[in-house]
Structures are given as structure tokens and as C-alpha cells.
Length: 423
Image (cartoon, rainbow, N blue to C red):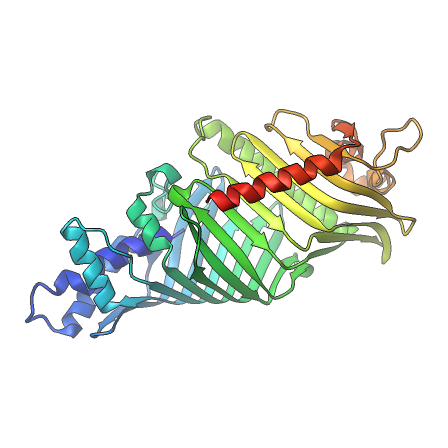
């Protein structure tokens, strides 16, 4: 959220803005730089201590013990947190040359920027703090529509190296706590396309817990992130296989969590303009696929896995999830396979569409997981989520069995590849 702010801070506040006075010492320049960056960040970070240091080769801003001011994300939803240490540094000469070139109206390459964060604790909660002590929804100083982001800012973002250590993000909704923790994440700029910025992102120790119990663990891996010019599109390519392991109690907690999220999203849809064409399209590729294990009384209730996953989100327009080489096993029985399964929704009001090649079960439209879902429907604890579960069985889903699914999937995959090459 603060990437844009830090970029502006460095460009405007790094040493060159004091170089006009040769009598000014490095110490006073560092203090002035620190004060200016603090002023630019005052709507997002507060408290703590900050320092600035400048020498001939490197300029650094460092802050300790900063708190994230409450940011109101949606109706009844806020973000708070704290950062133990954050430092932002750049090459003094490169930053100076860039600032002088900007003043003279000349084009120059942006200087590399290094951002390091240690000890990040963030919490998203529907326990909304007082509106008088945070960033109001009307301000949203850290959010900018992608078409308003100038080429100059995009040029700086492409040069940012991010190093995050010991990060925890907590989300409290519906009486449950979803927590993601990561020991290390490092994003390094790499050569991108003609109209895109690209990073290699290495992560270690990434796992997700629900109410204190692990539900998802992601193996250490090196991923790829690509951002199109002017924030027109974001592509994320994951090379780690996603493994989700749940018990029935945890599934119930996830449904409670999801129900609260849907209620907040519905309220937000009423409060904001229906025109959201400025939102950024998102594409996620899970190169190694994913697998789900759902257990009941320590016995398998449902197992599902796929070889590859494509997720495309066009805000306020269309969401599509494409799974390749899908295998579903219910209650430890024989597997049921489909070469491809596609879920598509044109809007929140439209019924979910599903295209698959699972073998038919007589005259029934029941899907391979229908028997497992029926067990949950018979459990009174799931009564509040009955509509969702019935929907998951097949009721409310527009089902289509396709024989040419493989060809269509290949054509769509080729289309995605062509889009990335053009970027």
C-alpha cells in the first residue's frame, strides 16, 4: 500500500534537494530528508523514531517502532498494524542525477530503490477503530486508480527491490482468525517486457493458519510477478504446489469467514459507485497446481487435485478459474477425472457456470463431490450455510459437459501466453 508513497518520498526527498547549498552538511541533509519522508507518510504511519543518513554513495531513511494508522478498507473493515524496522535506500549520485534531469525536463533511468522491512504485523478486522484516528475511506491515500499512475511513478516502481523478514498478516472475521506468516520474502527486479515491469520473488516459510491450526503450507520457491505499464494488468506465476488440508470443523470456520466477507462486500457494493472500470485485471497461474484434503473423524471425506490452475479476474466484469487434469476422490473411493474444469461468473448476480468432462452418473447431474457435500448438509452445524452447500452440489450451477474442452483450454492458454509476450 505504501509503495507509491515511498517512491515519491525518495524521488523528492533524497539528497539532491539539499545539494543546491554546498555549505549544508551531510548530517543536516539526513535530518531534513527524514523529516520530509515522515511528513509524506503521516497519514499511513505514526509514532516511533526515524533517522536519515547521506553519504557520497548511499542515502538511507530508517524508521523504528512505527504503527500503521487505521485504514478503512470497506464498510466495517479496517487495517491496522505495526512495523519494527523499515528502511529505504538509494544510490546518492543516481538519485541526484534523476532529480536534476527531471527539473531540466530530460528523460533518465530511475535509480534503484531498496526497501527492507523487519517485523511486520498487520491486522484486518471488522472491529472498526474510531474514524477520527485513521485514514478515512474517502481519503484512501494509499490507493490510486491505475489510470492515474504516471509513467514517472511506474518507472520508479520497476526499480524497487523489496526485502521483508518475519511478517504476519492476520484477518479477523466472523468470529474466526485467519493468519498468514512468512519468514522471508524478497522481490528483485528482472528484465521485463517492453511495456511491463517484472520481479523474481523468493519466499520462505509461508503458511496459513485458521484459529491457530495450520491449513495451508506453501513450499519455499521462486515466483514471478509482472506488472503492465500504467497498472493495466497484474500477472502472478506461482511455481510452488499449493496444499490445503482441512478438517470438517475448519471447513465450517472457513464458511463462517466467507459469509462475513460476502456481507461486507455486498455493503461495499452499495456504498461505492458501480463504475469500477479503473480496477486492475489480475491473472494468477499455479504452475504446479493444487490439492485439497478434507477429513472427517480423521478419515478422508474428499480429496481433489489438479495439475495446473489459471485464475483470471476482470473487476466488475468476469471471473474465471480453469483447472487442468482434475481428479476427485470421495470418501476414499475410486477417482473421478476431468481433463479440464472451468468455473466462470460474469457478475455477482449471475449464476456460476461450470464446464467439465466428468463422466455422467446415470440421469443425475450430481458432481463427483456431491456425496461428500451431502454429509455436510446432514450435519446441523452447517445449517446456516445450507444454500451454499446445495449450490456446490449442482443446484444453481449452470453445468455443461464439453467434449472439446481440451482444445478450448489449449487455445485459451495460448491466448494468455500471447498477452504476456505482448507486454
